[in-house]
Length: 228
Length: 224
Image (cartoon, rainbow over all chains, first blue to last red; front, side, top):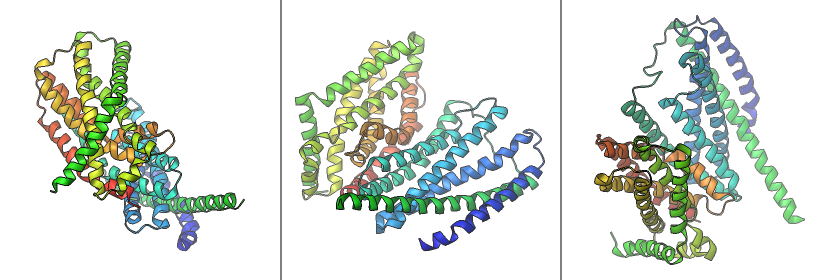
């Protein structure tokens, strides 16, 4: 925990710098032949989507660690990663929608990836609600860890079944077949990917520290309440 | 396999099923809940015969899913009221066996309601699927196994929380999306004579995964 406090603000400045550099790259990337300037939003969208999935992996690792060894730190990180992951999935859905309007002519299509991302968001929200509903912290931690692991098994199944549903049942929907990225676009995407990874790490550290402080405050209140 | 453990599974399930048949508590509220949902659909869409055939698989599965939630919300009610869950946990059998017992009881009740629901759907919406009824019941059973398997685990997870039914729905619905998709597609396929084997396989995979994992997860959850 000590090390988190130390690296917190350097990480913040670093992510700010990298994001600035990334945006500079985005602005200098030539517009796409078909998509025009709206391709710019995809650099944010793709990076955010990767982070939304990445934080589920963090959550799974922290949950396994908690169920195995117990310990407050693993659980604090698990709770923090849920919030950060949820934030990134909201960004993914919002940017996807904004991109979809000019490209697909609609804010939303029940595309396989969009649907899976929405389910991921609902699972994140469910995890937040589950913790909120269980008063006892140990019980909440255990329930959330178990649910996170159930979700981890389910997410591939959800994705797989939605893809099947979309391809077997209806003609393949829009956006299938990843477009080829070339030269400057690839560089921009890589820079944005790194920037978002650092930003995500910063957010996780910040949220972990916040959750820890919240818990301390809660414990102090309880103590005070019981001692009169 | 130790036969005494099977007997424990059976006694827990039997206790829940018989208890419910005597009180006509969960079973009747599930049946009337599903009828109300059917009425709501009829008013909402007022389908003609052709539309009814198209809507029927989705209608059946959405109603079955919501109705299962009614039963799942009460899965641990008896134990909560009488403090029976502690007694159950104290008994010298593996926790997974306790889970299987609770699951089997819930599965039986939900399946009975879902079969009644299927018949009601076909009668009330004038869908002629009588020649495929056993196939559709088998598909329903596969779906119900997965939904109740995950559902009983989540009911244990959310036990004793405020606004538990809402939480249960929020947690369960995204997880059973694969079953919902496969169930609707397989039912539609059975009615129109399409190929249903990929969807059946998907449901079997889902059921096998979760019915293997859920007893373990339940064991972790209730351990002290």
